[in-house]
Image 1 (tube, rainbow, N blue to C red):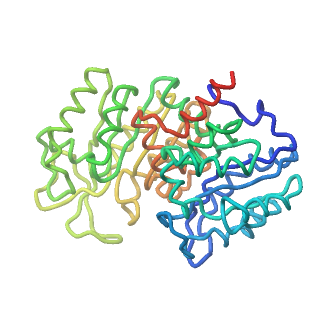
Image 2: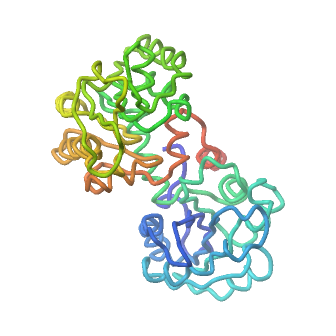
Image 3: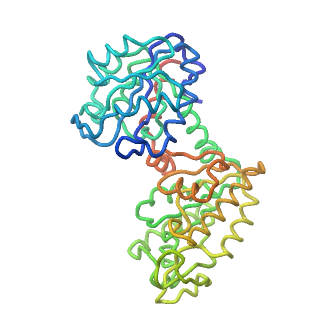
Length: 402
């Protein structure tokens, strides 16, 4: 791998600056989803075992360089202590005397969480002076925040130029999963992309059709491609002004030998709502006064059969309006087919971005995929083929150290 890891960087008895992503969902100071915290566990265990003093850096929300109480990280130390089995104190600032004083009290295996990085304008500006102030606080920099790696900030990019640098265990796992799925996958590769709009996923689609063998489209996104092919979509959500872009993507797919697979049948209705009356029709037979809200059983059966021949699946976005039953059926059944193939050892499955994690949680298969990324924007930018500044900084640090 073109970056240092915790296994080959000397962190014994060092003061480690650990960039985590603790921008967790919270309401009134109560965390509502612990996933990002829990996924730090492996890195924390390694650092504790090596008697490191752990200095945790993170952003929270968008305070835009101002000290706003509602964006303070001060509520998190007890949560980290409980979830990670870690002795965690708190510093009122992330640079300067307050931060240094808190670090000076640490014993090996203990941690301090520094206040929100984004209280300082220098963080998002990737100001070298602010990065230098952060670097004064530690001996080694460990980046375990893949979900923030698409931002060129002082704590995700700048620090890697100033201290011995490596990827944390979560960062390493994310990069390995994405590389296995997109850069050097076992073939055939199927990408499943759903959601509402192709306008937000043009770069992603254009990159995927050059790299995968099959692109399955669902959700309202499929309607735009169907419309572009001259198929009646009725009242279904459809970006008709994106038809030419859809046709270009189809041309690019054909040129690269990627098959675009659209739904064979759809679940349709007149008035949307929980358990609303609905019918199943062939895709080409959607009445002008009805809308499609999910893929139908023939599509599920077709995709499940094709999947049995695949070795890698990438998933981003639901197949229908999964938030409202029973229009989560298409997403649920397809997700369970991926899970079954994964559990049988036939498939590497990687999913992430947007509503994907929620959709797969709804299907009850989160633990059955090979890897599920909670990185959101960073995951999508990776799928788009973009260089992520935080990852590039790790690679550059590795080259400098070599």
